[in-house]
Image (tube, rainbow, N blue to C red):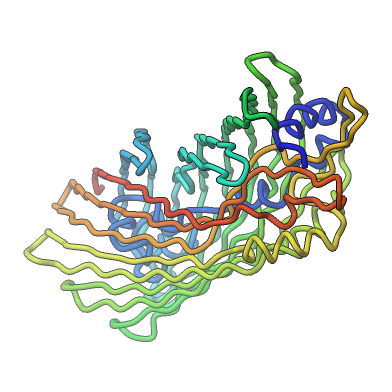
Length: 452
């Protein structure tokens, strides 16, 4: 039995080949880059748990239903600041939402108004730091992630008879993902500890389209459906592999990933000027993801994705209540089901396909032996929950909102594992180190803006 850090060092050599680069674009990486946090947006949107697709009137709801901006009556300009922290002690500060919305009234009895909007919205924050220990081989791994995904939307929507609303939006997306993985493991005698480091930076851009419809059968209720097309990202990535402080390899390459389509449905209840209640549902079939390298579709990656991923369902509920004139209290809850099978089940399926999650990296050591090693440990997302609360004040000209989001995520991890030469089994495929890890993070959001 050989220890997994050999696999990392030897992988670096194999990865310098073009085909190895393609193999490193694995299903878990594509999934991680495709996921979104469903409650991020303005503080009002976040305070209601993101359940505003049918309530409308806020630009953040564009990603759920492009018709939502037509349901408001005022033009406004606003900006949201987000202070992020997690249980690992990381903190970051960013602008998470900005918008310019024009509501243009018409003198037509049928076509009541037009809404035009330019918005910026952060869809995902990657910041995470995780430390794991393999009790069997006394190895440790430290994963550190930074970055996020953002979108700039250009939207047009219309209001017909205050009963039918329609909207379309074009989204220009941006992605940055930095990952550092430090792996330490003793040799067979336990006297020497190898320190292997793998770091990568991925940057990319893409585009998508949103369409939406809303129908209001009464003053009390509004229903809607929305569709977001897949996003095609063009990504540039560079990576480095080091062992014991010495750089073994460096490379740059480009590839494309194709995220799944999102279908959503919304239901909103408006109780006069006193309260709003929103319920939003969306689904994304992550088996529909795929990747492209050197202008060729990666068929093995596509097979792996179909075997280990599944449909994710997201439910968001939220409410806001007017306490006194202009002052609102809000609360919300969102839950996302796991977009992927259990790790053990996934690994077994990949074994049947003849590979493992990070590609086939074989290399020859000084004794002529062959080893197999995953490039780094990975985590598999499971249930994610978002609990939010907030308040806001809206005057005749200006408004200010505050929201807090508590994110509770469960991930299943799998450590780097050695190759068993005696049985020719990939121990990494059967994963003797599996476990669930709880990960929590916080968003403190402040929005302010002006009506005009």
